[in-house]
Amino acid sequence: MRVLHVYKTYFPETQGGLEEVIRQIALETTARGVTNRILTLAADGGPTTIDRPEARVVRCHRDAEIASNGLSMQALPRFRGHAQWADLIHYHHPWPFADLLHCLFRPSAPALVTYHSDIVRQRRLFALYRPLMHRFLARVDRVVATSGNYAASSQVLQRYHQKTEIIPIGVDSASQPTATSAEIAAMRARVGSGFFLFIGVLRSYKGLDTLVDAATGTDVPVVIAGDGPERDALQRRANAAGSGRVHFLGRVSDSERSALFALAGAVVLPSNARSEAYGVALVEGAMNARALISTELGTGTTFVNRDGETGRVVAPNDVHALRAALEEFANHPERTRALGVAARERYERLLTADRMGSAYMALYERLLGIA
Image (cartoon, rainbow, N blue to C red):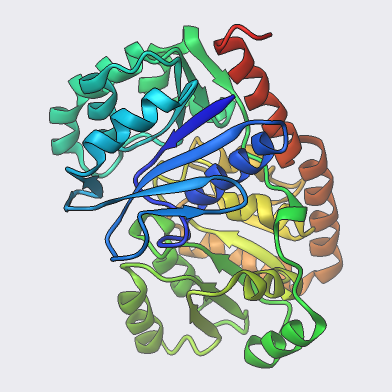
């Protein structure tokens, strides 16, 4: 079985949660006999194809970007050729240019789309894009939502509920590198231990301004790992507020990432918009038996993190509520560790990559008439 994944960004150029989801799906289905390719865009002058353990990555030059929608003339013929190669095409939404590719070339292979997120911020442009999106969603054979929460709260998904399936995102611990004792010691020397960890791309919807403000005036240590368009503004905000216990690490390697999860006391994801549709960092925190703090957005974050069971769920943009959760965890370490144990148990029941991979494999086979 040959599957072509289509999304606007991928490793090694970018390191976001959605890229990790695609990697996990590809790893799991590769182990089940699928040959995966990933068609993506890239701005640098690197190789046009990269062979990775999970898939061959086909990189098309990004000519322009409008409201985070990458565009590429080179992708037109390359998509057509790789779509002819594929037995099945797996799109990852949102990427409006992929909708255009599908509607323009009308590939004969069955197609599904994993609907990762509504389009939230670009409301005016969304009005222009809406007809293309609905034409695309009407033509694909299946739509996958990553949680029942998101399927129920998305007006777009409600329109396609008859062909929507729920497959929660999972992460495989074996696919993550294990930090050595020396790497953990080096990270401990940089940032200590028992801190509250945010890890991901520093975007506006991540709510990190609220996290910085919540940590201000407390003794609560916060580590923000990752890079992105909000980094400079966040560092200026922290410096102006005198938030000396907020550490910005920038982009970290895979082994440094593992060391951070090993040293963290809890994982925090203070996002403030539905763009945060799931929260892969929360899954990784649960996998590492860490208590979780997230916000109520009506999305998959509250599927991953259950208030009072695996952590705390607070209102978005609420500095006082987030500060109270941080201080509660910091002041009651035994309770925090118990929440982390419960998070690990929930991970093992619902959030493993094996469970996700089995569900996608079954869906692929049904679409191809194998099952």
